[in-house]
Length: 447
Image (cartoon, rainbow, N blue to C red; front, top):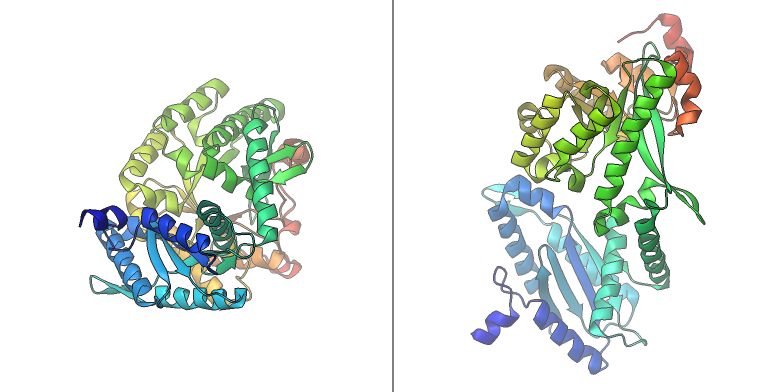
């Protein structure tokens, strides 16, 4: 019993990491054609917080039971910890064979789970490594599978990816990127670009969203999407986020000096790690004081997942922002699990319509219905609704028709350096003919 407890997971009864490494070492030493799959449940943390930890444990036990029943004579299933499982498959003859096995497991995992009388489906992502002729050691195979898992999750989730030479190169580039990113702040390589938000009926400039870029000495200007995930994984996101916040406040104060006092709001994205720092309210207050900015000139944008992560602490932080006069917007609204309960109970001022819904508003009736519902919800809860991803005048027309009067997107402006906004910041208004179709302007269509 003592040996069993030392080599098996308490919750699921599956072999643990220690037993897995031992099994993998033995298989590699024996020269067996083994493939390793790391299985990671998609967005498990969000669902765990949403449903409660007891329900999360119930889901993990159910998944473990399903893996156990999927084992063939020479297969091996284990739990690495958290929401990660491992499946060892023996006697593999081809990559196609191991992928077929992986997708069978994804089907098994996605079958609905009964949790307190309600059925929930959950997807997973799988990273696969095959021993092949290289005969790697056990830890190296695990690293390979983990790299493949990262690719599966970043590529859309609910899929299986096999580690190959392309992923090996990508992993090397990623590690090099991490090393360079550590020096980027001190080396002064970070830049801010700004995307304006306007009144969709009048063209009046209302706000600018501050977006970080990395001016790499060799690779040129790197967009945030290419390095933020590395920053989050390494913990650098907090330092980067604080630089962005301080620089955005400094820029706003500079605009006031150059273009005269204005009501323009600066919107600043805040990562969950940065948002939940113990001194975040004091940090924000310090930035306001140093730059002589009123709190109502700032809006902090957080995602729905930040709200759900630690709701009590989140509410306390949001109240702190509220006391400073700083507004808060829920970004990418409609893509997560936030409900009317969260919106009702939290001091949130605005919701931003995710661009995936906005861009489909005139070609997909479901996207239009979602957008219309969110606009009505925002109106009922006295929240400002802002559209992201406006790329064509007909999208603007539909948004105004549905009652959304604020937005941003490439039709208005791509994110650009501060100096590229000089004309707009001086005039404080955009020509409305750029935003609307001629037919809408001719009819004088308003929301």
